[in-house]
Image 1 (cartoon, one colour):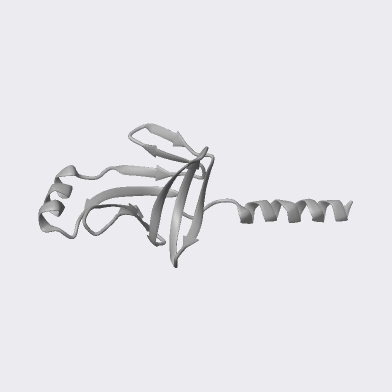
Image 2: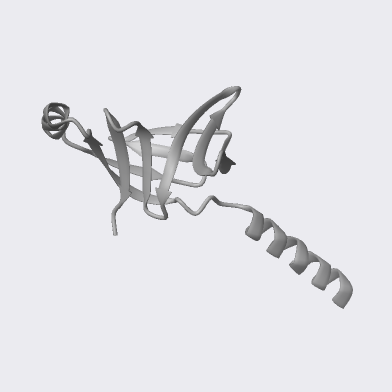
Length: 114
């Protein structure tokens, strides 16, 4: 009986260790740009709060579920991938609390709210 219990505990630990993407939490979206004029327009657009869960994003009361949310490394950069069916939405991981989509000209950042 002890062997079965130990095997079950090992399988449970393995499943817990494999799950999650470490980016679950509430984020504030911020639009930005390296260009001063575009940055001014981005500030007017304001930001909102977004919650990232284990398999969903929720914003303004609307929840969008995904088949999988996972990290991918490509060309030395890390990305958080939101996959639904054959479609993927990809955000670059800036650091443990910041995701970014876009480039220097126009971008949107998601910054984790403490």
